[in-house]
Length: 502
Image (cartoon, rainbow, N blue to C red):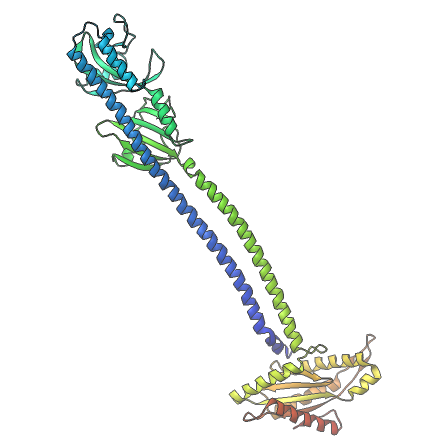
């Protein structure tokens, strides 16, 4: 429909601004939520790394303490062995197993270690004697035990850390540390410093990371000696070369690593290890990765739930804000429409015509292009109102608006000045072109049959048109209106239903 482009142009700025505001709200909300979730992911990843690093540091400190504890126990066992051998060298007694001096010395060892270390002696054929005991009867024969055979093969004075065994006398797990003396003493050749593993395991168990962490020490060849929690099926059994964690870590004396499948239970663990200098032993302290990350996991879940609700709230708030902006845009467009549109005909109103006319004159002056103005008035409109009534008159004006819109071009502007008087601005149009358009419009109105009643009643009308052109040099829209109005007046005086160019 001609004139629609101008009508759309009225609201184009506000529409664009409204759409830009809606788009900005959506983008800002999306950016805010993406940034929030991005920061959350960054925090979760970095906090996870910090949690693991803190756990590794704690494991390293605990490993150092355990290494000192194991070193002290082994060192005490060696000191007890050396002291017992020296006592035997210095005291030629008939029956060491009942001699008060040696028994007192060994009892002192037991008390100093709260029963952790006990001293036994073994003959060359493997008979084991306790102190104090029956000098005529050994309590057991341990010739089949690994620790005895190793001691017999080792050089005198060298302690051997044996494989843990279940005592055939007490039924308890014991860790034997054996040493062959330089010479036999009344048949006794090997000193066995037997360590009560239940005491050691209890100590380790109270200190290990809960619930699935472990503390253990191994021989360098991969034989498990002690572990808390106790792993009876694995104690004393060697693991494969591939499972030697301290070798996988490069053979350093201490270090930390993460193992997906640990030898004993297959749990993914953080492992801290330390080799004992001077002893073929390695201490391991581990923490299950799931246990380590459990506090982190709870924090991540709590924060993610909070972020989820923030996201939902942000989306809802953004949606409500966008809807409010949309309605505001619609209301603004409606207000602008009401401010620029004639309520009866839908054409532009006088206010808009005056504003647009001033802009068009300024554009004409800038580019030096021609411009014309038409004023159109319905002939004998008062008689129509008096004869048919004002509702019919309104329908006549509506019909006239449709005819005018059908004639004018897209760049033309049609508006109602008031009553039955209309103005048409014709940019890029000289006097000759304006008269042609005016004549075409006059003829179209005269030929049109306008339905004015619901029953199909119709009337025909004619119009008078005054035309003027604007001079680019010093003309104004108000002056053009005056000239067009005078031309319209002359058209009326000339008998109506005609076009006059003024």
